[in-house]
Length: 420
Image (cartoon, rainbow, N blue to C red):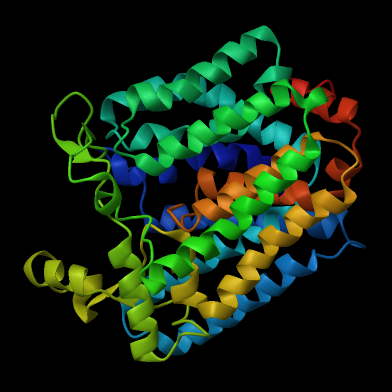
């Protein structure tokens, strides 16, 4: 049997376009072609597991979530009414099945391989795509650098310059209007300083910050629901003065449209998704991978612009907030199972890690959990793939058993040609 998993690095490169397709001026391929690519990628991950990990089982947290995904997909077959429902079902199934990547991504050299080959491609391709990108796109294109930049203290001088340059390019060629992307890269750059001082780092401080980030979404959610404090309504606490930046959806160089950084673009999403779940009685099990949530805001738009399309039922098939999509498709049960993957990943590092470096990875996992309550588009793309990279590292016995010296050596060589 052909080792199809050898093509994974190439397919990761191809995933660059779906990562930015919404924000570029041209299209490549069609839905069928990208579904084929996604299916091949998932199959390659599965084949790698079957061929090299016959005696190893999935971590229970990932396994239970994957079972719930499968059940939600079966449920979706009964819930789907129209073409767009079935399309949503297939797309979401492949997105949430990305957990099969665990076995491949748990091996250090495999992370190095896909990162190295993608980075060499991106250094050239970024400039070719840039003239056609909206200001939201650079941060989506360069998503893997939000992972790679945290290791910059360990790189050779040339790669330090390259990685830091392209990480800063998100701010130079992108827009602060893309607030979540700016936050993600700013956090990565800040955390990289911890690796810079890893030898004198206080693990107790890192543990406290990691734990705080992990529980913070629950804290702010409760405050928001009870009406004490809504973190999204910054005008209520900082005054009505606008903070204007270049609009993230304007075409680079061709528009002066601006956005207000203090605009609340999240409260109504929480209100709509929760209200829809209560009204339609899917609070616990979700509406299945096939169906979205009732959206009065987008139903109004549909009446004027999208008659006869996927908005015909007054449903929006997904939103910008990752955790709300999990809630809509798989209910509170899905949210709990998804959250367990993050919390057990963090616990693994706290309990089993033989090196300090993995505590910084756990901190990143905690941040991505908190970030899922803010944005993190639910897509089969580079951003989602590298979320599974850091999650897999926290479950990987290879990374957990490394010494600090071994981890630093791996990080130093992550972008260097393999000697094998």
